[in-house]
Image 1 (cartoon, rainbow, N blue to C red):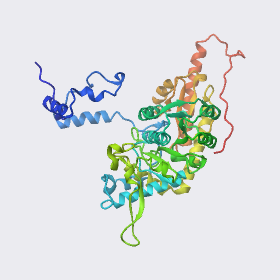
Image 2 (spheres, helix red, strand yellow; image 1 turned 135 degrees about the horizontal axis):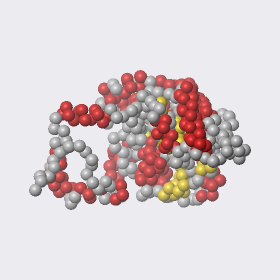
Image 3 (tube, rainbow, N blue to C red; image 1 turned 120 degrees about the vertical axis):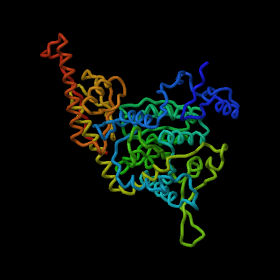
Image 4 (tube, helix red, strand yellow; image 1 turned 180 degrees about the horizontal axis):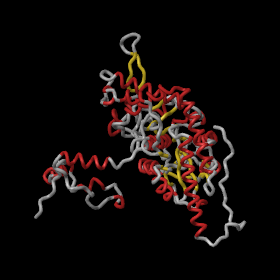
Length: 486
């Protein structure tokens, strides 16, 4: 009989250790811990792992070989976005957050960790100014969680279950939100029109059992919602809350959702001084007005400014600490554990460095380069823009008119050192540009895509019996959008 396998790096794989742990929690097998995971998501086989290396140097060599397979967006031209973006991170951001008092700090209390609390208070204040809101939380794990929490807040406040989703949402985000709120809320989807919310269709679905209307701007495809105030008014007429998921990177030039009727604004701070890396550093924010009904539903920590026993001196500490799960434990409205506070400090440094004018300049650059990229790609015969909305940073192109598949374009241009975007479906490609994307970069993508389309068209023409001089065999170019100001 073969002895049971005990991993050299994981002592708890020893049979006696496993049995003792199962007995301690009253479980018959490890499978009981995964009862809530659907069967179709389970692997049902051992992981495909190499035989354990007993020598450390062999393990190091193996891991370094795996890591060497990664290629960062600094090594090739990238138009990838879809939730994690390649923005410039000033050197001072990394310098500050790598200081030992921030990098190693955990959950210090005011008497031992004044600096960290003050830094996060400054972050909250800068975010509140950018978003035209009054209260912003210490970052949650990511923007997905922040959005799920924002919707849960609306459900708890109203006692209602229905949430109307009025925008195109990133699939990964939708999956996380749906899983998070499924016990409390039911998500219903309203079709979009030309990339943005169908306000008429949305209004017809609103009723007094709707807890919230959820709008994403920019949407999954980078479309900016132009009728937020109308949506807010319609939602408020039936007592519903308007929850707006957004990216704060554009609000140096765009009108914040809070000034267009939004009750809760949420999203991710990855764009604000956090690296793209291999999936990004992420942190979620939730912002509300100075309204106790909303503030007391926020599960996250809030740091505020307070007087001390010493005249003229101030300190920084928790606001309404008794509403959090830190104080209420299992009686808390929503559990909050270790979050992304370090990334809040990074975003705070970034915002302080940029200032209002810097954020304005950045917003204008993003809008201009997005528009330039749209025009350049839409001029390629057979390539069309996905919609006529105003876009920030991302947009889709339809390649069907050029006889191209989105996955095929990715494979072909990747061989040329270009990551052209993320396939949305068979013929649609999501393209992203930032301030790191120069005009020359966009021109290169356009030229490579045009050449690929021409080669595909020539191959198709050579295999066809259609006479290319036949007036009926025309090539249709995508219309160019009229100039639109932000």
